[in-house]
Image (cartoon, rainbow, N blue to C red):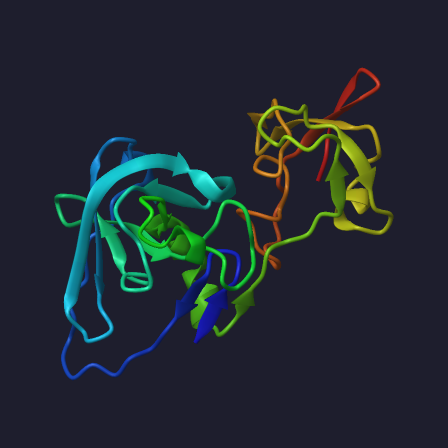
Length: 220
């Protein structure tokens, strides 16, 4: 019915002969590093498949996913990552921290590095997927100085004329200091960019703030 290309999700509709049970969702703030997690799926011959591990990280892939060391492959993509109470932590997806291509994530098969999109994230976009939309990563039109996104300060090297960031008032040399009212200390694809945890079409103020020549001001 619908797709989310940023999170590698597809919404399918099935015709069920009877009402299907619905698993409970674990609140995102209860997903913690070190907790047990079980990846559930089916092999190509429909044999049930599970892999047990722990949640090894949260807010991975620019805030889109939780990470697990359970073995993840095409046998369980689209299946749930659950806790020991049977609550759904998220949906297993072929995301990659390094690439965005359609086949990204294949290099992590059964490696002990797998990703699941929290169910709370999916609930936010579910009405749009049900409406048949294809959601794509947003574009703000800025380039940051430096190459180390984990260590370099969030300085804007270039704000492309006519792009959303430029229209919102961001300029070359600005330093982003906050996003959604949260302080940003490092290069902020994960803090500022609508590239990641937002999708094209959301009509909302993001609440960015930048510092220019000693002056602090709010952005769009």
